[in-house]
Length: 556
Image (cartoon, rainbow, N blue to C red; front, side, top):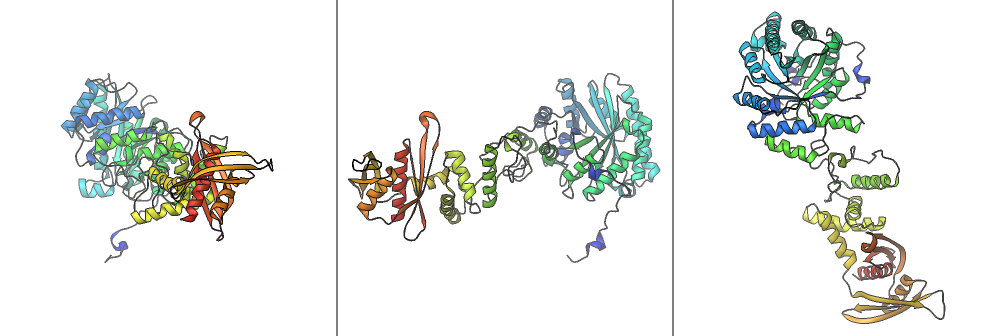
């Protein structure tokens, strides 16, 4: 930079709030949610939604559980006006859902807004005018008295028109736009003036929406501003304090959470944060953050893939693959150490009797969002033994011993390094199959028979049919069991310098579909482990195939 930032920008002054309470508050219930996807989100789109996309979004928001939905700015757009009329005339609005319509504090716009909601059962009329020092000076060229008068005159007309429409339950919302850049005492003064005209009751509270129209300070400052208003507004029990954070500093979610802690009752935002500039606050993010803390968000994101598809279709914008909760990759681990920890976490969870979710690197169960575990662990050149072992176990029932995990990971990583590509679960199994189950070499196991050795009844005599270099032959040996006898036969026939160091087995599948998998670790003169794997419906056959696999791999 050719300049010092201090020459061009100044830091935001902190709020004088002695003994602030919000830092120690714990969020224990959901706020009232209001979706502004169809208004604030829509006006930020490169191609604003037409009727069909608007209707699909509205219906989806209702399905998710939103009880308040800002459906448009009907006085500013014929498309919005017609859409509001369609919702009312065609009976699209459930009885427990309030539509919300936005209007500036100008007479002709307010009247047009009331025309749009005529005949509805209930509606929120959202009146706003900007109150910040910058907008007073630069945009309106008015002093504090003049700006407050705009709010007063607008509220008087809203009150009058609401009284003339008794068939509709009209709730008023007022936003001192650019609230975060407005002096606190002045914001409170304007809101109080509006409140005195509207005269809210316990049955019809006024909504004071305090927007971070532009996010200009850290999230804790916004919380201080909300708590200041929470403490200083009169007749607080007649007020629903609402948040409308934007995300210019990238802290919209934090600001909203702090604002709830500071006393707010309500949050306006959009799905995945679409909105002007860097966006509105992401309601999905806040709601699911609550969910992970054991708090019911009162919104249903149990099919997050459908939410993503709907939002991407309606907005014609992609949801980032790393977007919290909804992105394609948010539950995916490529890192070897992460994969190993996740694998161990799943194993520990299976063994425990607890329903408490405790998996490293996964703060939420993907299944709660309608996701399966297929994408939790994916393998590329950054991956390690844990991820490979997890995929083989989850998808194919292959439970690799630890040292075999290490060896297998080197084989897979070599392929990943060479190709620079991600390896699918099927690709990894193919590598495993070629490397261990097929283990091409001179010896092919065909069949075997075992009998009791007449000389020593505690030992077994084994006769195995194998192919060696394409020629079928029979080898015989005696040992404590089939594995020992087969090793004795092969050692005598081929003068092997190998000994069985470890042996493990397990079954996969159930009933008639059950298959045994055997793993053998051998050591030779170099003391390097050499592994073989066999798979067969018969456990002895699987074991002898594993021996054959290891011998072939040693020879290669």
